[in-house]
Amino acid sequence: MRLAKKIVPLLTLGIVNIGFAQTELTLPFMENIQQSTYVNPTALPDHKVSIGLPVISSTYVDFTNTGFTYKGLKNDQTMKYDPYKAMAQMDETNNYINIGFKTDLLSFRVKARDWYFMFNATEDINTKWTYPKDLFAFILNGNGAKDVYDFSTLGFNASHIREYGLGITKDSKNFTFGGRFKLLQGLANVYSTSKNMRITTDNSGMGQMSASADGILYTSGSLDNFDAVSYANNWNNKGAAIDLGLTYKMSDKWHFTVSMLNVGFIDWKTDVRKYSIKGQADFAGADVFGPYVNGESFKISEVLDSLKKAFVLTDEKVPSYRTWQIPQFYGLVKYNLTKHTSFGASYQIEKFQIPRSAFTIFANQKVGRFLSGVITYSYKFQTASNLGLGLVFKPGPFDIYFVGDNMLVPAVQYIANGFYVKNNMVDNLKSINFRVGMNLVFGRIKHAEKQSYWGL
Image 1: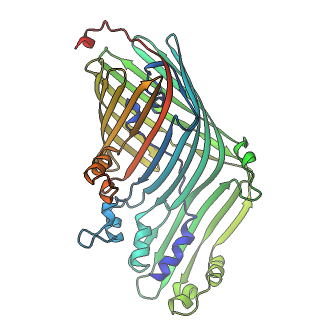
Image 2: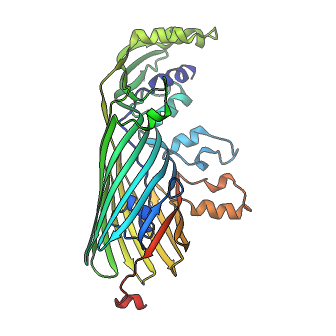
Image 3: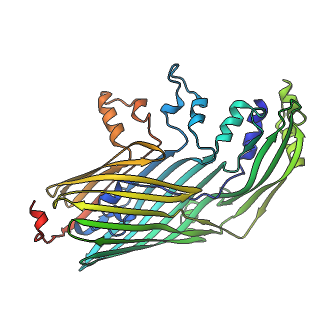
């Protein structure tokens, strides 16, 4: 057990290629706010002009843990934390924790005839950990419980990116086309790739182990002589991405949409360092960790010296490296029951190590010109307790909105708890995200009302 706990930190260089994905399943159905174009480039707003002021127009927060839920971490009898119960829920290789934050520095959208033009500048900070089930098994059960522990998907990735987007949407009788080009300004990044990271143990009782490693960790950015102005204006790390969308209006009632988002990359060139670990060796655990295992004084320098003999560790400065964004694909069908009421469904898929998908159904209701709401139900990360909520309130020349994919259950629980925050609000959730903001809006678009179904 002790041996396992000391080797695990040395495996964190065995990291997979990972980028950043922040999936929003409710926002695509809120076309009356300009931020819906971030996930649906063909969304048509309610106003000719929408202006988003710094920070207050859009702030987005995401927390995701695909491996287990908060309730799945607690023992049903003792109500104490039970890591063995959490481990039983995990995927064998692909689990991840994501913490993301986005805020708009400036945004606007303008209508000119049948064309819509949009601009946004967005600050994007994201941190992601990936982990296999074997990590928990190794820590909890020790090195003698299993023949091979594979840590090749263990890792960490973090990034700070500023995005500048230029979008255009063209509306016609039967089709709506939308697209957005995004210039990416990379400010800081930690990125890695791994071919192999595993430990093979000898269960004969001899304590023999075989470890192999082949991983690379890249970093861009340095805290040495850090200057905030130079950091914020660094244009050495440039990249680009595109969003594309198409809506087919089969009739006034039936609309079908497909979109492809976030296809692009960034080349990192500022203060780039490359750290690598490579090697394979057979050794007895007691030879390396003997003093610690035997209860004697423990010196980390002795452990590191032993590991250096088995593995080659390098640290060098390199010109650049490239990271790819994670593409996302949406398919959406909407049925307009009346002018103010619509229903529909969407299917979303993204490729993050393995393809992951989500299915969502929604209902959208407008109440006059001042209030509209969306309720969604999604199946995502093998959980079905995902109830989303979106609200837009327009009391004057501005709209105030709130949208989240898993906010309805916590909100109801919060009220049921007597307006107190308790654990049961997030018991069964694997992810929770929300976006909140306010836009200035002018010139309400008047839609033709000659279609028969609007009179219902």
